Image (cartoon, rainbow, N blue to C red; front, side, top):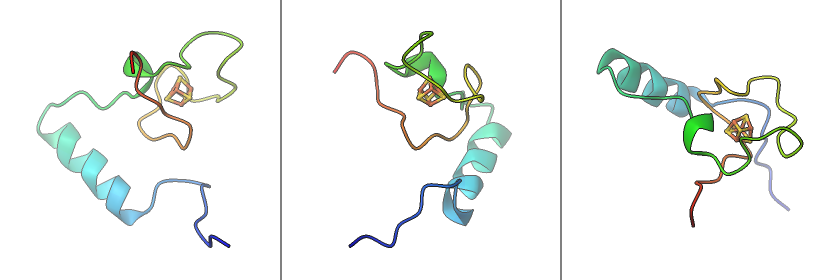
Length: 60
Ligand code: SF4
């Protein structure tokens, strides 16, 4: 059984997001997510999620 929780970004993800932001990189996941349409995504963070347990890259 996995002990991994998906309640939020861990310190490592938070650090990565912060570094990317400081470099001016695009950190919004929804722009490239295949669930980014009404009905497919139930996250309140959409369309501006910077971290998401359900993120899947579009076009694969
Ligand atoms: S699943 Fe996550 S990354 Fe994808 S559109 Fe929804 S909130 Fe954004």
